[in-house]
Image 1 (cartoon, rainbow, N blue to C red):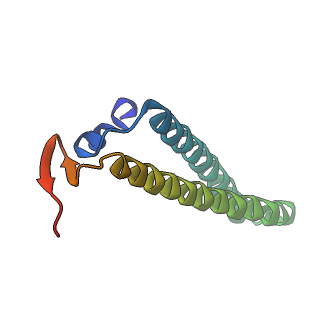
Image 2 (cartoon, helix red, strand yellow):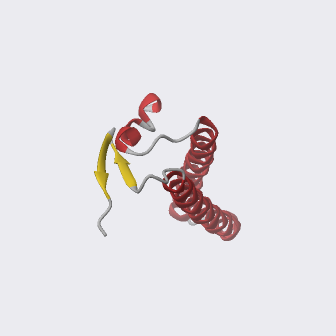
Length: 111
């Protein structure tokens, strides 16, 4: 699955390597945070099941950390969305012929 992260982009306008590297870096950051969240959730569940007061108190901090991580993921996805939109806009602006390119085929823009 690692090698096919961007295989679905084959029908999209050509994206330069720098943009793809930025997207890949963001996706790696998101995956790292999600992996951390899985560990946090497991620890929170274990602490909850133990019903030990110290463990339950520790859950307060763990839940705050989980919440912060979720906010970071939302922020990363918002940045990715914005970057993708800007790159697509820049890509389409680069074609001044009035023709849209899609999957290597040209079609006329509707008037």
